[in-house]
Length: 110
Image 1 (cartoon, rainbow, N blue to C red):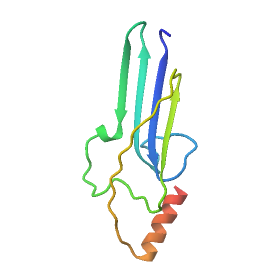
Image 2: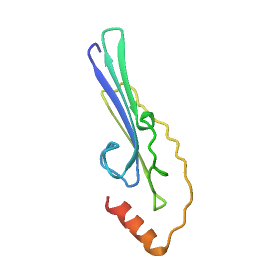
Image 3: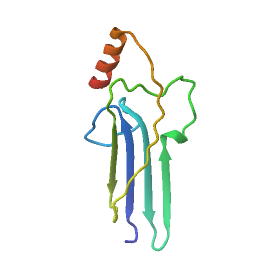
Image 4: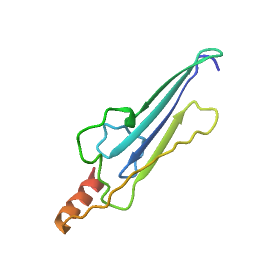
């Protein structure tokens, strides 16, 4: 339909969320958003992905202290179902029991 604005949002978070959220939320590790504005036979597409941002000097991007994470997807005004792809890279680390407990508590309370 001419003039229709559609979008699809995807995020990876360390806890289950009721919304997709964004990279500004403390429990979201990555996000992607695609917005399409239909212009009567043509379309303008705007796309953002948190991996498009410049790399930081941090040695890590996020810590998942538990064995759970969530992939969240939501769309508006889409005619067809949309999906998304996620690629996670992990490194196993070691920590003392007190540091691990603090990481788990921080993850679950965020």
